[in-house]
Length: 357
Image (cartoon, rainbow, N blue to C red; front, side, top):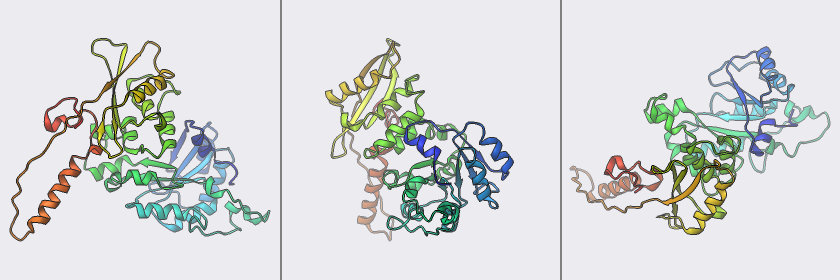
């Protein structure tokens, strides 16, 4: 029962967790799988047949010191409450469409005063009231996760990462590809699912734990092996040593042992800026403990090019000119926001290779 959440404990210690995603309701299979030195088994109610006997499935998995996690079929308070009463270690919630729904989902997993979860001392998660004791740490025990599968939530990812008690964000590749209207197995989706892009989307300045956990997860045994590892590790550096807004790594075309890191920072006003000398020195010192022995790290300033746009708008009859102009300006500002771009991406529109903005 609620004694040891094995997967949450390992995640809190920056350790890699291994598990199995199960869609077939078979306790015999679960018993075999959970003896394979894994950390969790995810029971899929959304696309699997886990509707009957979930409590027994949870018992089977727990008996082998493995954490049972469940993906509920949809955002529904009944599925959340019942699985928590069964003693599930974690919940993944799909089909969430707004920050309000995410907040409500988290509240449904927390007892008052932090949330609105109902309490029953006679269910499995309360040890059936045998010892007449209430586990006051149960709110910290549960692993809470959402599936990011809607483009509307991508634009609000910073706010989502700030939600207290939300532990994980799982990227639902197939539903997200439908929302983006792209091939789920194509190059665009592979880029979105790459470690570098996931970090670019999810890392926020106030989420130091997310930065360190993500870097520890993606880097190979905390050592840098590939060029991409330099980017991941650099983004995990504490903001106490300076703020990195965008970074790109490459081998020097003239010397393969020189690893060039192209870096841009950001001012308090949200404007792009070159990295100061202290940030550069701190970054080199930090990466020195992880780098490949023969690599020489060189910090390069990213190029900032300010541009201005002039456009002419023809307003159709029946529309307010001021409203149309205001909407057009907002649309252009949104399109050109620095949050939407990284090094080199703007060149498709303006033909300036390697420029950020």
